[in-house]
Length: 183
Image (tube, rainbow, N blue to C red; front, side, top):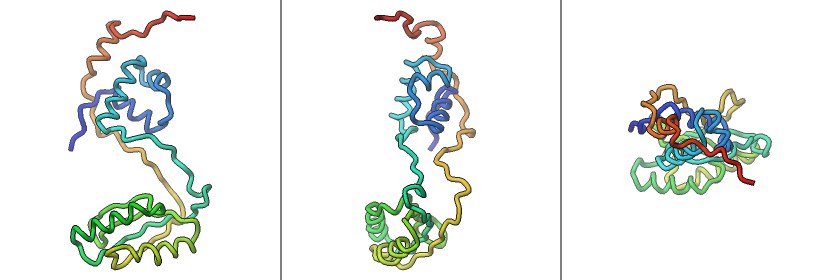
């Protein structure tokens, strides 16, 4: 599915907010070269269209005593819709699972898991994960070090559409912010 037409200002908003989701609208508008009102309208539209799915803080797992990062391949006993639904519902309730993907290849699911230490991970893998509905087997890999970890999406493949009408109106002075300061 192709994204809606995005002009250069929309792309700048997405890039800036990926870098720092805590920017105020005033800071964002200054960085992208658009006045605050059109900037806010565009940001809200991007949120409503689902291109901006949300805002959250990125926490450092190691500083929160979550020193084990693992990737676990899960094999289900049967590949039927009911088994998959039951497994997925169970995984949603596990706070150790920070990401779960249905995948192609040798396994049915790939989990990204964080745990306090190896003992905690062993308990999770053997006692909890193997006890989930339909799980036939698991294969895990522990991360030795993080080389790269980012939730930023590449946007260079998107081509900017012609500039939207609100910018044209602003350039003509129709949406210029008031310079009158009230006491």
